[in-house]
Amino acid sequence: MLALALDLGGSHATCALVRGAEVLAKRVVRSTEARALAPLLRRFADAFDEMACECGISLRDCAGLALGFCGLVNCDTGRVLSTDEKYEDAPTLDLPRWAREEFGLAFRAENDARMALLGERGAGAARGYDDIVMMTLGTGIGAAAMMHGKLVRGKHYQGGCLGGHLAMNPRGRRCTCGAIGCAESEASTWALPLICESWPAFATSRLAKASALNFEVLFRLAAEGDLVADEIKRHCIDVWAALTVSLIHAYDPEAIVIGGGVMRSGEQVLPAIRKRVEENAWTPWGKVAVKQAECGEDAGLLGAVPLLEEIRG
Image (cartoon, rainbow, N blue to C red; front, side):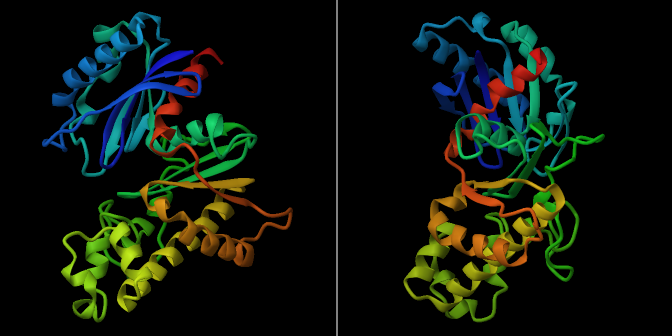
């Protein structure tokens, strides 16, 4: 199957032409107006046209356009239901109509973490599993679950995809979702500057002089012996590990696959999470496989074909 894929994550917008489990071409579309989606639609269309021309493919030969969105989505209607401080106009847009009028194609939309899970199951670390949890550690914390080979969605389309908003600290900081002490507000990229600046002895750390506070900087300074950076790194890993155990208890997976930008330092993250799972997860049937995602930034794009195949199924 040939498909158009559009991945709108917390910090990127990527268009791609996908055939089966292969990304034939892709374009990153950047915008200074990050809160609005409507102004980008023309640029998305142009990017798809350019890629089709380069690959010698007619867009009409595609099975459809699949969108992975960083928010809550009604996969039955293709409408965005809610978004957390990103593309705030998306719920007002008739995206299925746009795809039909612009390309003459069917349209499907899904939460971006669910799309990443579909991609990893078809072409990555979740191959061979029917009961899976996906966790993405990046700008925020995404999650998705699959049971018996079917995505968990729920009556209100929230099932499985709000893992980053499970409470980890009842006395923690307020999250962008409005709750207190979510995993995301305790250990995500957007929250990291707040975490660092409120940490005891932050002023004595090299973090205080860093031009940017992100996980790449945090892990590097921790490795170089900065004690505050090491403490914060351990705090974040503890949050991710506790969240992993909670997701295992909630969804009973055979495997949990962890992706996102933070996993560029996966060799430091995975052993600690595996240890916590072995010590604390109640799984009398056996051990949950804790795996690093393999598809990288293409995971959500590779979810396009499986999502469109649901129509045929």
